[in-house]
Amino acid sequence: MEFNLAWGEAVCVREILDKHYKQLIAPVDIVSLSYPPYRVDTELTLLLQKITGYKHIIITAGTTGAINTVLRVLKSEGRTDCITTEPHFPFYPDIIKKCGMNHHTKPMQNLPPYKKVRLMDIPSNPWGHIHNVTDTDNNVVWDSVYANPVYMNTQIEPSIQHRVNVNSLSKWLGLTGLRIGWIGTDNEEDFKKFYDDVLYETCGVSTLGQNLALDILKKVDLDSFSKEAGSRINMNRDEFQKLGGFFDNQEVPVNGMFYPVWVQNKAIEIIDRANVKFITLKAGGNDSLIRFNLAQNNKITKDAIKAIKTADRLKR
Image (cartoon, rainbow, N blue to C red; front, side, top):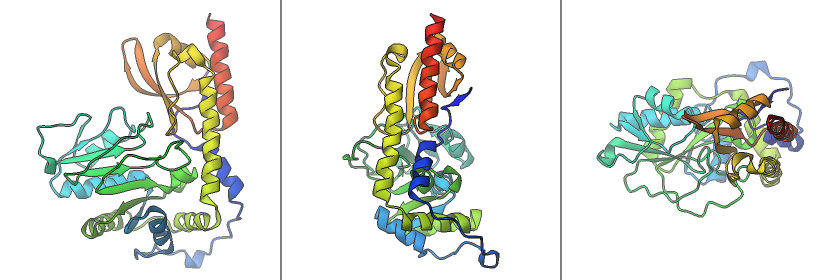
């Protein structure tokens, strides 16, 4: 049996949403299924403004769509280089390249501030790190996909200054296939540029998706849902702790949805023998940095840990 703990699929979160959201979707009214609204004051955007506190919200095709739009607009200002942490979301390098920018994982002190964009994921992917950020150069894009109670056990106490925020309702709810993200900003000029880019790139985001997202937000107690979904992820954190010395007691992050660990080739052989799938973030020599998804179904995760322990015992 294969145990897929690789890609960031929020299965246990989606299972809890299914428990909290039991509304049956009515048959689609084909006649009324027109283009998404061009207006910016839709019920969904107004609700997200209330939830997030941003003056302007633009609906996008997931956070990926939001990042593409923001980087394209900032590139048009003459910003040529984008700086991220290392390691990072695997799509970052190609998105940055696609938007015509150079990618760096170091501060680039010799580069003028007006040439830079700092794409900051807090909590970070995959470590779940939280830290202070200042934005004196007006060039910080905050990727806050995991900055919600589902994926966090600690409050964000540090100050995270930023020019623009990108986030994902899909990831928060566990509905990764919904592809509903957003751009949040308080700047009027930025808002107009971002809005135009989304409009002329995709002509809006799926009417069906937006309607479903709105219905969920109106009918689900987000605090209760988030608390219960977060507890399911924490169950998976606890399961990985049971591996003990197999990963040399490397701690499971308290925030985020991943468990990144440094492993040697012999450990990878055992994991492969257990048929547990993972993502390799960095490989070289005898050590590799690999990543496990902490939001998989609880039983699958529990069985995967058992399989690794069994394969390790048989190896010995």
